[in-house]
Image (cartoon, rainbow, N blue to C red):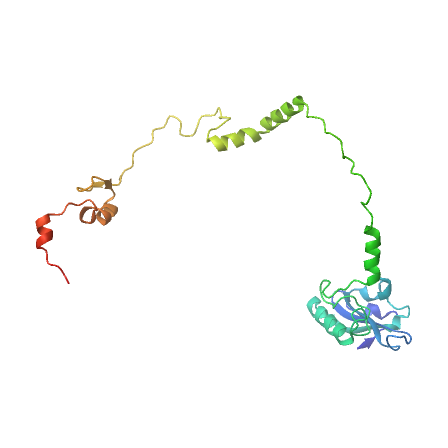
Length: 237
């Protein structure tokens, strides 16, 4: 632990992180003088700057600003901050002597809003819309001018929105291009080695040799068996 003076902030590495504490200058109902009332993490001159909350302002006597650990990574400073807050405890949840409103670390984990803050929010939101009449209550909106509808349709057509949607649904091109296609006038040649097809003698279906031999010919469902061969064939019992 290092107690720093008014100008000791310039001895802290501005590019690294540190964990600091604010000490009490006198005894109170909560704790004695010299004990911390706030613990935080920061970099640069964070420990010597004013905070948004009045209850966590740095002490006027800069010698009461204590750097607990320095030259830390941000993750390391988060871990030590949480450890120190847990060690000393928080006043708002009645676990210790610190004025911290969170458990430390990144974010607002463990934050508990004070009753005064809750009452202030409730006061501001109470009766905001009570007794107020909606501005459009009982007002009939006039029908849209047909000319405006026609103008909207023409604008969409000009942008190609309607034509593209209709073209996708019908499968037809609404705005055919006047430029000739790349293969216009060219004859598409036949395949050099077209797949040969064979015909099943039992059902008459045709197809590729592999599929036909697998499902037809001797395996065909329409094959006609010789009744004498069936009757004279041995039966396995």
